Length: 268
Length: 357
Image 1 (cartoon, each protein chain N blue to C red):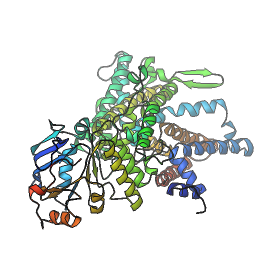
Image 2: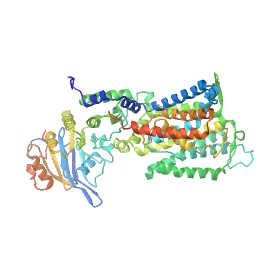
Image 3: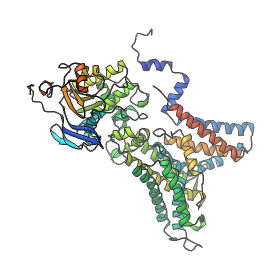
Image 4: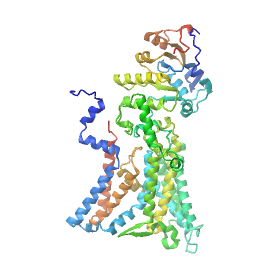
């Protein structure tokens, strides 16, 4: 209530619950993502981070609770549903097909056909157009240091693959990109590149949910930090209002933050 | 180190690439290169042995008659191997291809057989066009049963098709009593694809043309359409395909339906080629199609390979067959050579898949 802005959340979840048999993943969890921000989601193992993200990305259907995108109530039945609402996810496994090339991977599942009879009757793919567009979107993100857009993804380094996966999520008019541990398998230099990529995406107006265990990285790029604990939101803080030690303390339950000291509204 | 231009890790590795690594990268990019090299080598060796060394009857190897026969000999395995390739690209395998083909051609022959012939089975004397159509539908349905079991119950393709191999073989025997129907017992339309025609000194058959047309159509479908990309993606990494929004089950099911249709055409081609329909036409045909696919550079682990490689693989098998028998060698040597080739092909595939940037 302290902030003066009246920005509405782009993605909002209220009272989300999800159980797996007797294991509770989410227990009446709240979540908000504001337009143009990087919101980090942190939490201990088993705190419900993954479950929350899977609900938001359409991979899981919550047992109870409501989700809104741009104020409209949504009920994702699949990742395609989420995608149709502009919510894209980059999975830790990257979800790229290694033997297919970069352009094919960028367009996997939403290939474009040629115009006219070649496309409608013979279902011919517009490979030229897709390659050109793929090159353009990779260049735009400034991540294209690969030799060729027709290179199989398995011949790329870890950071390059990550870039391809991020570029795929950032293309096609998406508004929200969910990144699951994007730097977990990367070296120092490549991690720095990916963090820069996240900032670039934000500067292009995209909203980003970043799941990470890496506190320094979270504090480097996040606008707000959503701390998950025991299946619910323990607090939302900012890198300015709290230290890394504070966040770890909130994660483990050693510290609680009164609601008026939290950052529940938009900061950007 | 001395270079002033900024180099990436990739550039440094690229400079150090040995000849072997270059070969590896090349084969990774063009998996059909190895079968082309093997086929060319075989031809060169047989021609050399025949023309220069005068081994056995190998001097006949480059006669138009031999070449025509080699090509005609590819049609049965070659057509079935198209279906096998598409299935293997999804990281599956089809052991029931031969059984479905036999079931399909026995349907065709038993429907079309003249009603006046002795000891005809049920439903004889139908229009031969209808008979062929029914045969193709039967093959498509039989193969889609494989697809249904694999997709619906998450059963491994190896087990499902091993089971249906027995089921379809038994069904053929139960329905049609293991009787061979000779060409003179059914209308010409059934044997149509065995019809030969001359181009210069060469004799080709309609079946060969149909097979080549199928190769062209399905090469295009696999490389030029979204369906083809999805087939590769599903074989490559089904989890990634699913997360990319591909309906993996639907793609898999469609693959088995398409395979069934191709098997049905192959059944028609086989009747033409042998001028008969027999339930024990080709006991080893399953393994031969898998051999052709593997020698052709398609990975048994799915997601890698080209249809053109399978055509080359089929040619390798047939050329080896002809060459060794013209050289006067025992049939066993041909079997031996095929065995060596299969293992070599899989070893090369394993090596290629380790390629790095």
